[in-house]
Length: 353
Image 1 (cartoon, rainbow, N blue to C red):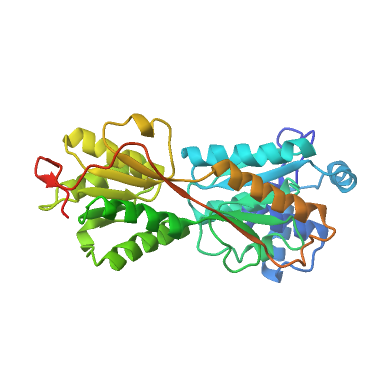
Image 2 (tube, rainbow, N blue to C red; image 1 turned 180 degrees about the vertical axis):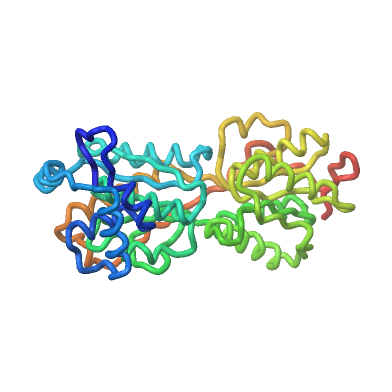
């Protein structure tokens, strides 16, 4: 619940939520007398309200009942990743002509932060939420958002709840990129990826493994690193691969953070190996090592998500009772520099046919 003209020192709904150890949306439902709140949570909220002396802002509430807020929430997992900037631009391009603005928040991949962000945005009366899930399930949305606002997932399908979603062809893109490495003669191919719990990383790993299996190429366990979420950890993981007695001649990376980390490790160690990765990035075409990327239109994901959400917010034929819709955005494999032929060698690293 958004406060207006707050008097300094007066408690807010978020302070009530923190004291009661519930979400701001739960507090809002208790104050509205909603029957969907458990008795335990209701008692916690009522006790916190009494302790803090909280009083709802009736003026703000009445204004909200008469007017839409014109805002949509966007929850992402890593603001440092350029992918999310492109995603946000696509969403804004679709919603701005409708008179709507995007309110952005970051979870840093933490499921607890995701749930807090959902509650906070709901308390601010956003008309809809576009969510890049951080946790393995979004079943909590049924409790946090009974009856709305509508939610659209991006990048990962919903789990534990029905919702519209926009996905990338993660499996197909990874499969095609790995096949390109195999066609160039590589047989020792390392893998740098997200944690296994991350849907995109899991699907891309599955596509990578499927291509190797179809080609009859083994994948040693020590060629796989799946815990990287930033540049520093990606570079450290690539260092580990390059230090192996028989290091990989090529490395497949599941996102641009891992790709750039791998490039930095290769450059610092002064070795030659091919890099292939999901997500294109600026300057990929001027790096000093061959780079093949799986590219797709991140802004298109945002536009698709915004259209799905706009349909839900508008109601009519596309209301909450309509079956969840799923859109899968295709990928393309782009080579920014020629893949080295089998036999290229430097400091003992060479491709093996």
